[in-house]
Length: 592
Ligand code: DON
Image (cartoon, helix red, strand yellow):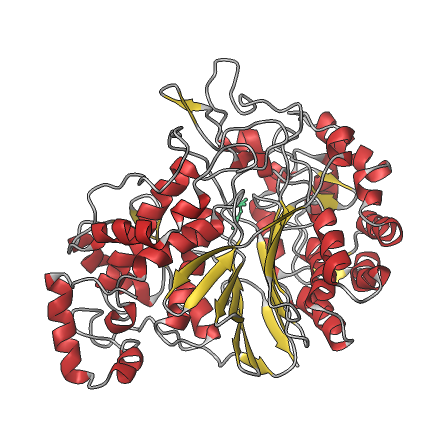
């Protein structure tokens, strides 16, 4: 690791810190208590006061809803693999947290195989219909549609990938009979489940949009009233879909009545889409190599294109590898200046270069090459916020340069982390994109609006945008299911929802755990600061607000706001597994 020369402000700070921190080993510990030039005395610290993580020596699952996590835990307790448990968990999530993920959406999965020691990824991203063109989200005058005009209805619906991903993961790594994995979800869909406070709140906030589709309105707003927390809600249509899939596999989804039902729903919407049964019949999951970046003693590995997740997390960490964050500590605005501006530089590259690499040439390896990131990291050597950032020039043997992109992403999504008794690790982020997706429902599940993750514009000043819509293409994602490796073995499994803020949440959790010595529950709970495009988002009602004034003095614009991550993580330390669930949502970690 190369440590850069310190900026004058940082050198002064560390000199003062050194007086109180005699050894290097002590530094990491001291770095998580308030230090010079940081939060005012008596202010809450950035190390959250939370319960210790759940620990076990066998298996562990962390997911966004207790019923879903328990379904996976039951499979793990019965001897199933992480892939088996993921299927059971996802099927229940699609019922009890339908606004976030489900059979009508897509997902990315990172898998560590304990037997071979290998990492791989499965791309179950939605695809654009073959009838989609780059102007899909432009109106008759060539102007981009308003975001929610594009989201609600059939236009935004891509071919779902999640059902095929479940089947592929099970075929590759499952050991339990496929129909057994459907039992709990089918039972809950038939008998009903207790509506959670979060689901009830989100339905109440989305009444107007959910009302646009009669099927969604009937289910979420029975008799015109939003479903209430604590009431029992059955979903017979979903139970029927589950039975068909349990008996017929993914084929039963991609062909026949279920596929036709999806296409009919898309076509009958007030703003119809262009999805066809042939798009569903042609869908396939793609296995891709994991993208890894070096950070300290670790390889941080995750999902490459069409996700920007692993590349952007990897760029942020790869730049920060040149600075000693452990010594600076999380209470210091200096640490967040470095993290925030590294993130802005990474987002500049993301906007320029990252898209579905099956459609556009991409400098994938060049973007995370340590020498390129060391050059980019030199830009962080000053004391103040970078006045402006632009995309860099990674090593690339392709001449074409893309125009900067401007796509919009807003909340839903879920993350599942699992380690099974054999030591296999699974990190999967799963989504229908916006909360309640396109708001269209078919077969008891919501249909995604993933196509709005494409750029609405096709060109900037005549230069094409890499992430423009094209037939069959997969929209760029920010999802960052991650497995952090050390000496060839996993040490941290992590991921989050949060749109393009996912990247900041995941990078921050990795820094908190590896540099600042926080346990996995502290790492997922700690206050967030995220900077993607210039404005520093600071989590409202947390200790992070004490950093607002010092960040402003450095020249950052700031915005104090809700930052609703949904981090679910498992740390692996020898035989001990520790699970962390984000207190901002309803998730739990269960281990045995
Ligand atoms: O793939 C993506 O990056 C987005 N569709 C994910 C959406 C999301 O995380 C919303 N989060 N709260």
